Image (cartoon, one colour):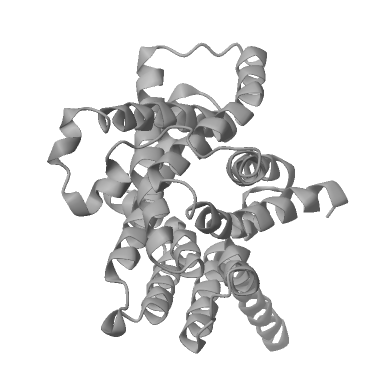
Length: 327
């Protein structure tokens, strides 16, 4: 593999793995909903020049139905999935949330099976079972210390899986690439979240229970962004959100879908290590066991069909050899 191609994989792998840690640190200064808004607004704007160039090069003009598709996808990823994701990071360990989010492709398989009638192979079914077992080992549902944070993290991952299916279907209908779909979804989602944040400053906010007031009443837009916090905000927005997703899609074009998917194969293992050294989060034995199980499931998803074909080829060669010996 060329050095350039390798960088397309290594850089987003590190950025995605450090995402929860950076958001956990920033969560001590910013409102979680505000941080979500700023992150996707700036991240979407960072991808906008590439999207503009792609649409001009391919003479793509979006109609109102295309914009509606982008707005719907943006609502699912930014307003729903990533808002729950940010709240879960504030309530539980960043490493656990990172592992749960990495399982979103498995939830995408389930959603595609039920709603798009996509075929669920034996390989995918086995990978799904292993991933769910790994998550249960890590979460330890019989001894939950923070059920709310875990529940929000799981919901975020499931909805992220829905977003993955929606993004694939809608980008195909519109005729744009994955990077452009991501950019437009980010911008529309940030706009929609901004409207909801504006409503938190009106009388409607009085209906929000008092225990949720700190997160959902009078949500600030850019308060707290100073010269001292700006580097962290830019890292989260431009690098972790914009560049990571952009390089992920570029890696697909450069090295293919399967090698690019290694990014999310490595993330469950790397994120807890980074969280241990940076945040001091303990790595429990059950977390290590769960990570290994999830990694096996991910490897089966990525390499299972290839392994199956190789095994079949070995048996076919053996069968042919036996036939020749009989002759």
